[in-house]
Image (cartoon, rainbow over all chains, first blue to last red):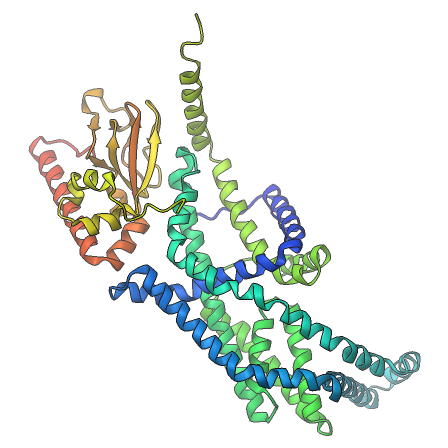
Length: 375
Length: 157
């Protein structure tokens, strides 16, 4: 923001507290919060297209209907193609122990890497061997755990389908009635703060729009780079894996770690006897991450959220502690919203002239209400 | 809908038609402009904006009366605006501080048109935007001519 004043400690404490309380409350209605959040993201992503259609003479309703209808049809077509294959895979996953197979190969890769390290760094050797003796069958246990829980995890994900169906429906109405709803909310702002609030809201809206559009562009670039790289290496499901990793990196730091783990598991399974291919996949992942940080991200998102990395990491841990996995996923968007609200309220509440004007109107109303009370 | 102005016959549209800024607009165009306006109610003596504020909106008087004035300006130089008049139009054209303060002389209903929404209108409905821009230029020209003739500063911009 142009007139962005740095928030004071009180505003920051309030922001963190509000974030924690919101995350805690959101846990119970996650089935609603997640579709709303994704609808808002989809709104910002599809809005330029709707805008262009409107520019060519379409009404807002028909443009939004066309864009969302097209998107739903595309998703339905994709589902029709992929669902039967996916369903047949899910039923065979447990029988063939595919997930435990991935985990087993990942564990084998870690063990092989440790052995290589031990060969070159002798003092680690003794320590690692003692550790290995302590956890003789940790990899088997891990594989067993993965095998037992895989079907539950997949069924749990399928439970989300009805609430995810809300996304196109909500997005359509945000596209059509979003501005009217904003005007409805603006009516509640007192006269004294009206012009300033609207200016701040506009700037925030602009910032959020650029952030989400940048995030989508970044996800597409990441997915394409990873997909092409993994495909060239001959790794199975390269583009799907690339897309999943790109989406995972929406969660700062933690998402990248999980993404790297996925790459290791798939590459170690596809090339069980060629460890160097797994190293190559990890190198590709790290290369894309570096490109992401130094080239793609400045080109797309920039530093729009402007949150210090230490605060980001701390808040991810706080989010996880307060609301588990949902907290990990939601903590950054919620923190972003709370920061914005904190900045607005901070700027409005500390403006003495606006406060005086607000008080003056209240005094005028009070005087008017008291008229005729005295005999 | 709770917050929709809808497409029903709206008495506001006839009112807007009488505003010099929107004289040339058709009914369908007025409907689009109307969907961008924010209605605000001010009490007698309430300040609408201060001189030096970051100007962001043009105000149209729907009912009531508004007075604009500069600091230390003699009272006879104050400018009053009644129903159908508009003020604060420079805010639509440039991101500059307000040159005057505005206060409601009596209970007043104002319609605010924000610069960002006006710019979106220029882009999305360029014919409406250009007609309003032309009317705005015409009004500024008239005020400038008046100021030159009377050898004064145009205080009501």
